[in-house]
Length: 335
Image (tube, rainbow, N blue to C red):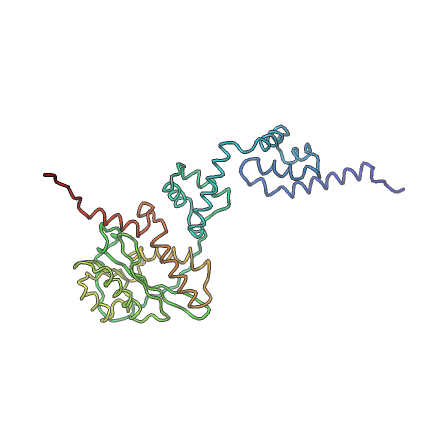
C-alpha cells in the first residue's frame, strides 16, 4: 500500500527536514550581537516557514519579533541613527588608515574629528562590523657585524624619547623580497618626532646604501654638534667612509650591543609596522612596485599615521607643534 503526501510519517519527516534547514541556515547568526540578525532572518524567510516555528527554533519571542517589525515601520530611532553615523565614521577612519588601525587609533582619530565616544564602544562596533587591523609578521636578518672595524659603545642606552628633534637619530637596514630579487631599505629616523628624515632603497647592502641616506638627512636637517647617531654594529655603519661622514657632522656615535635588537627597538618597531601593515599584505612582485610601496608608506607614516607615543599625532604635525613651542612670544609695547 502506497503512502500519500498527507500521511503523518511524511509530514513529520518534512517538518524535521525544515527544522534542520532553518537551524543550519541561521547557525552563523548567533554569534552576532543582539537579536536583530535573528529577527531579520525570520523576516526574510516568513514566506517559506511559519513565524511561530522559526521563533521557537531560534529561541526568540514572537512578541519581540513583532516589535521589531513595528520599529522598522517607524524608521530608525535617534539612538540607531547615531550608531549608524558612528559606524560610518569608523569605516571611513579604518579605510583611510589603509586597514591598519585597531580600536585605539580609530578612537583617537574620532576624538580628533569631534566625536565623544569611548574606546570600548569603538572596539565593540569594530568587532560587530568585522573590522580589524590587518597585520602579519616575518623577519629576515640583514646585519653583518663580522667586520674587524672599530665599534662604539652604546651612548644612547634605551632612552628612545629625546626632548627635541635632531637630538637623536637611528638607522638600520631591512630586507624587502620581490619576485625579481631582494631590495634593501635603509631609513633614518628622528627619535623625538618619529619622522623618517631620509631613506634609500637599493639591491645591495654596501656602505653607499646607508651613507647616501645619512648624507641626505644631514643636508636637510643640519643637526647641531653633539647630536647622537645610533645604529647596530653592521659593517656598513662601522666602515671608515660612514664613520667619517658622522665625524664631519660632529655626531656622537652610538652602537647597540651585539645581537641585542632591543638596543635599536625604535627601528625594529618601524620595520614591524611597515611589514605588517603594508609589505606582507600587498607583496610587491617587481622591484619598482616595492619602491613605490615604500614611498607610499613613508608618506603615510610621516603625514597620516597616528603614533601612540606622540599622543596620537603624526610626525609632521608633532614637529610643527614643537617648532611653535620654540618660537618666543612677541609682546607688543605701546607708547
